[in-house]
Length: 103
Image (cartoon, rainbow, N blue to C red; front, side):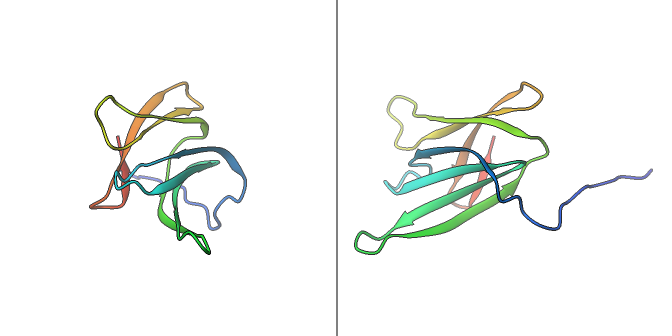
């Protein structure tokens, strides 16, 4: 049996969608950006000279069309709702232990 995997050599530079929230739950300011087929979590650190640090980069095997955040009642962190090209909606959360987005 043959299995094929397609990976690009260079990351996409165009940003399709962005969302702002507190995904790690420690009251940090974080931004999630959706490139063509990947998600990246960026953290804004510092007050005098703010720096943007890439926390996680995760490829997706679909084209991400839409992105929004929401918070459950009583929760201290935000969750991400992702819409893909196939019409599927996926709810994901950011795991602090593994620095990954998990559905």
